[in-house]
Image 1 (tube, rainbow, N blue to C red):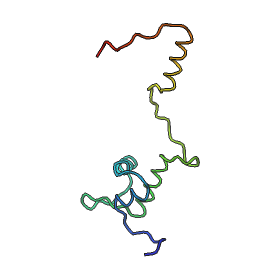
Image 2: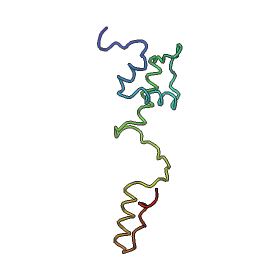
Image 3: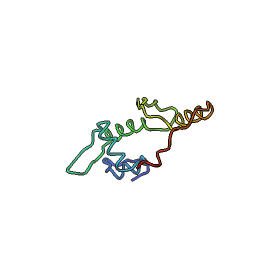
Image 4: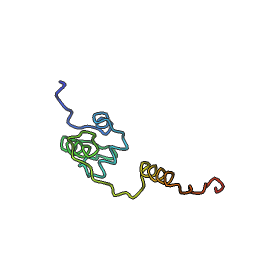
Length: 105
């Protein structure tokens, strides 16, 4: 087989090696993006169409600046940076610090 030739079907471990993702991450991408895999039994096989769909789905997680931007998660959790800014503002304003929780368990 030449270097340019691709196998007709890729197994999940082959696909993971090609795209440098873990088995679990690849399965999550396939489920979330409904990649059309072939499932003869418990084995997942990827033809050219499924590989293309998987490649498009992985672009959402790419660090490439030319890739489309990801949507904001809408998480309301505070970031470490905002907590730091809040603590710094409290120190600078002269307000007393919050009581320690070391006595509670």
